[in-house]
Length: 335
Image (cartoon, rainbow, N blue to C red; front, side):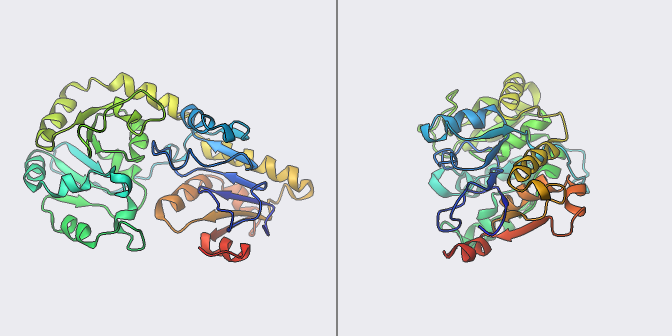
C-alpha cells in the first residue's frame, strides 16, 4: 500500500495488501490446475495474460468477467540462456518434469517406485529430471525428504534442482510430464511429449479448457508405467500430436514466437503508472515488484523484468523488489 504500482505473479491476499486497485497481476505460469482461475482478479488494476486460453478460463468465473486485462505473451520464450550440455554421448535426451504432490496430480511416486523402468530408459536415452521446486522445499505441506534422497541416489539420471527449465528443454528431445505447467513452456520447442498418468482410470485427456488434463491432447498418455519406454520410442519415431501441440501453443500463448513480450508487458504497466502519477511517469519511481519466496514465481518476475534495462537503469529506485513477508508486514498481516 506504500507504492503507486505493484507488479506481482501471485494472488495477494487480503491480509497482505489493503487494496489491489494499484496492483498489476503477472501470473505464475499458465497451469491447467484450477487454483489460479478460481480466484477473483476483478479488482486488480491490470492483469497481463499469456494468451487466450488463460483469459477464457479466468472469465468462466463470473467475478472475473469485469477484470481488466492485456495479452502480453510469455516472456520466458524471448530469451533462453545457453547452458553447457549435460550429455555428450549422441543419445536422444529425455526430460522428466513431475509436478508438485498436492492433489494427487504428481507422477513422482510412479517414477520412484519403478526403478527397473527408469533403468531401461537410461540404457537407451539420456534422462534429465527437473521436478517442481516444491519437491525440495521443506516448508511445504507435502514435503518428503525421502523423495530427494531417492532421486539423488537414482543411477543414470541428471537431477536439476532449481532454476529456469528452458535451457534444459533446449537440450532435450522429448518431454515426460503429468500435470506440470512446465509442459506449456515445452510447446515452444515443437518436440514430442509423453504424459505419465498419476491416476489411471480417473484421469483422461480432455478438450475441455477447464480440465486439469486439457494439455494431454499434446502427446501420448501412458496409463501403465511399464509401457513408458514404448510410448517414448513411438513418440520420437512418429510424433502424431505435432499439429495439435501447435494449436494448443497458439491458443495458450499470444504470438508465442514474436519476441519482445516483456517490453509489451512493461509498457502496459508503465501506462497504468502514468495514469496514477502523470508527473513521475518518465522516472517510474515508486513501482514495486512483489516477489514471493518460491523460486518459480521469482523466476516469473525476473523473466518479465530482465528485458527492460532502460526502465530499470534510468532511475536507481525505479524497481523495488519485495518479498511476500515484506508486503505482509506492511499490511499488518502474517506471511
